[in-house]
Image 1 (cartoon, rainbow, N blue to C red):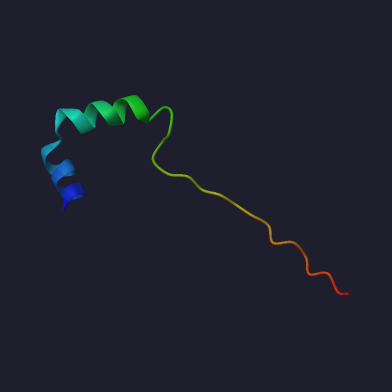
Image 2 (cartoon, rainbow, N blue to C red):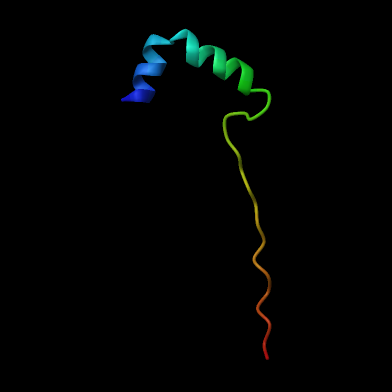
Length: 41
């Protein structure tokens, strides 16, 4: 509900925070990892 309210009413507080933080944080983060090969002992 909070997200819908924010998207529909666009209050100044969240618009200002979004504009200030977007260059620093962005919208999403993607992390890629490699699983180490299994070692037979």
